Length: 429
Image (cartoon, rainbow, N blue to C red; front, side, top):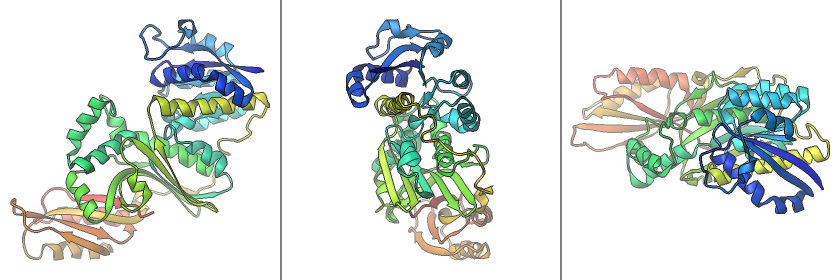
């Protein structure tokens, strides 16, 4: 039976989980693929601290370079975009295939890494970088390889989805739910990476690059997190039969593509709207497959370990049959002329304006909307509150972002408007 020697770089939560499950399931895996996957070492700068897994101490090392030399396959699980990149490039130069969960590194330096992989004829597999245990990378790369991908929309961050779900269920404001998420371990001590949409943007870049065969960069992508979502918006969304989700949105339009991350209203009757808690979901529209939805656990040791081990098995089979590049991650070469600017996207909008309870207020607001070529689809206006102000909620027909931005700025200058105007984009699916 052929043996593949595996080296894991990084002994954090995921690295420990992958090591434990590789050892625990090695007999089952060997029977399935007629190969022996042998874990020969785990490198980390800290091999003293106890982990909650049973891994033999003799497998632990601080010498990553030696581990790379001895291994047939390298699993990078340290994260970050500096040291991790150096180790991956070192392994690739030696012709060693890579399995990684490092979404930030792939999003920022994917083009360079895959060029190095092509030069060395070594594969990079990265299922665990997007949506945890959901096999979305493999599905796009293989199961949907015969499709033209028209659209991908993803709930890609479990922290944000948990917060928005609890705000909806408990009618509790953002900061209170965030504190609870920290206590439960669903949010980091500094949650900015998640709640400001950066994590979702990394994953959206990877999905877009895989779907369209070229690496898109982070810089021009519009990114908006969930800090400004309030319970009042969630309540109004419910009345209008919508739910609020943070989405990574990728759409193709002729020779152009758009990639954006922001909160959005989803119709409540759509399956995507029911994906709650820390779960992830990815909607794909392709031709000829039509619409498909993937959902499941998007993070955590178990789900991520499952994805990493699946990649290890794929790479091991490639080594067994000497099939480099059997399913390439993408083909280089520009397909799209432009990444559509946010100001040029077209969608529907939810607009909430807090106004003084006076006659003629809505007329003044609707006049501005009309002048900016924004058509109103529906209107929701509440009776007088004790504060002598009322919220007005407007749903628009499709219009350009630049028109909405101009209209909002004008509306906020009206003497009858209190505070900032809040907008949430709508994805109708």
